[in-house]
Image 1 (cartoon, helix red, strand yellow):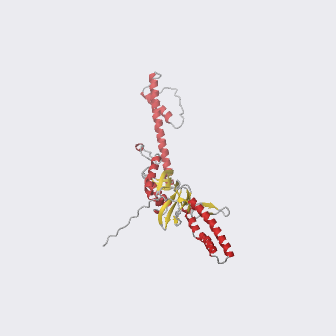
Image 2: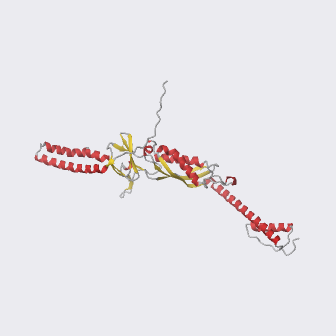
Image 3: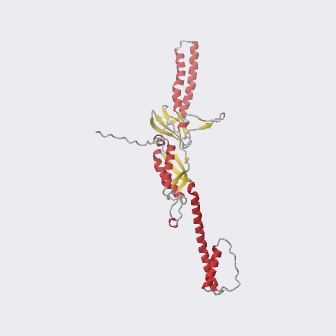
Length: 343
């Protein structure tokens, strides 16, 4: 049995297309238009005088021929590139290079710009939509506009999604990804749609990163633990690295990825709020008790130092009890005056 060799698909490498300045060709085209019109009119003028004149027929034929073939070739080769735009050029189905840099160029007229795929995630990249003033309907301007690949820095904001954190708590989270196209050939030919591909990989990377962190570190032993709420910069950096590793095949550069929304899922939000409130109450009570003990201790020491009153252990215990009630109570204490002896 013969072994079959499987050819692995190699990623497309971007080639910067060097094109000549289109202004001389444009001026030549205008000159040809003027000369063809003159030849056409002159040929008709000669044929009116001499119906069988060969020279008049040649002039008339040259004037018509220029409008049929050479003019079309000149127009088809002229390309205008705006800032931060690119045209990915193919020749008979083969990628030949990417035309970058703002300017007016002339290329092989048989080259065609590869169309940019429409995205369901974001607005069409490279297509200009204008509002029809009369009907109020949106319409595409020109087919050439849909073939322009934008090199601008763009933002992708996916919808909120429910993800489980490190502790298994469901949370609602969303991110915004700042990105741009770095390799036009990979973006156009190595993936079906680079915007949708980025969106899917961003969701996948978000789930992988979120499950490594708890929503919040609340326990004392976990005070130094990283969390989604307390370590947003670290989480954003790891998120950007994770997305970048997945979209290299699409020729996309990730500039930044940040969390835009972070909250517990609705089904556990109320319970988590009560937990946070309880933790806050316990911390506050602990602080109050520590302060009250210090104040009572200081009061007893001051009374003993200045010999204001001689207190035995039972009276110290009573005074400590009264002071702790006053200092730790939720309400204002109601004093009771004792006019008799304590015994």
